[in-house]
Length: 503
Image 1 (cartoon, helix red, strand yellow):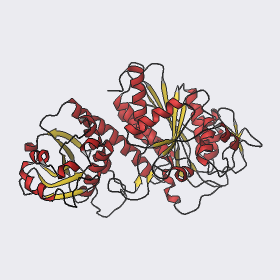
Image 2 (spheres, one colour):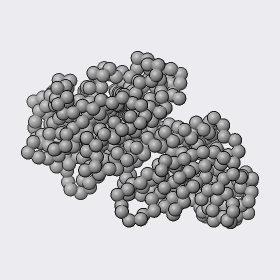
Image 3 (cartoon, helix red, strand yellow):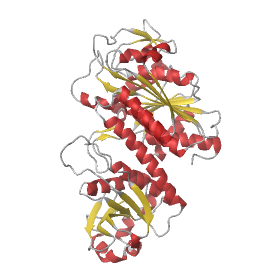
């Protein structure tokens, strides 16, 4: 059942749980909070300032209310100082509260708006995204009754709902659903999300939101000279797919066409350069870049920016077999460059380079690729920031701004010419790995070889695509990282080109 979100006054509200943001200032001055909830003022005064509720970000405190009031439970959410309230805090606080009480059976939630430093649209949009993210069922294949979070409604409790609030609801729902769509694709096990299945889901999504699709099979890729992509696919019985999804605005969108390219390895064993068995089951998420691109395209189709966008997802499995590509093999890419394959576990760059060449053939004027590309990025940046690489300083600044707007984190890393020396091959134009030093950088340099004169940026999200431990606002599993950054990047480009980011 889709999440229904609407607005209404408190006197007309009947919910299971009412969510109330609490600022640190409320501890010493709870006047405005008591005015908003006059029937429970004494109970609020009794708990505010205790160790359980100091208004600190991340605190949650539940009060059970008298039957007959607007809610059976009141959940106080500490969100920090009012003048420092952020969309990230609101998003995570709402998600944590809904996850906690949704697992206890609550279905109808209300939210008392307290804007703090945020504009109403930003406040509501963040809260709505948080509500959507809280409902994603990571454990969808369990057969026992595990009380999944099945939220039916979120009511924004306000006397007057202006255009800004309604726009926050609309955009928050579009983005929240898009992120969850990406999470769904990543969460599916590899036997249920083969390249063919991924293409099918992309086609269904495109039909739902009015996008055009073109899905290439192995024969068409061979005709285009995509030997690098097909070299990765050779070891698997599953056929590869190159998924292209197009958004064209009604008025043509001008001369700019943004290309979004996502790695779509639906399972990665490492091929002949086999990975260790430990944690290999997580390699179903090696298509998280592709999932993020498809999620972003879903949102872009609904937000309708006034420029052209093409999403491209090269998809295959990387498996060992008698047909698999060997270390030492040389392949010719779609651009004609030859690549010596030193390590078959460095496969993502091989499928992306042909997808980048294909994007250039389609006429993109700039491109961003997204990939779970290297384990080295976690060594460099930990689990806090995705790696950002580009040979265009303007794109670095734009993507950093887009990530901030999406409450995601990216950090720029160097692409000095000296690193190019590490991927020189003795037998071919380049090799697909550059040794043990600077692994994320040499991987990015490999991709840069195929950007040509087209402004390009690469996001290495290997450390951000999967949450390794349960958090109050996010369970262990897929994060949907990158969807928001790509959408905000496109909207900002549309605004710069046309003066309006979208409808």
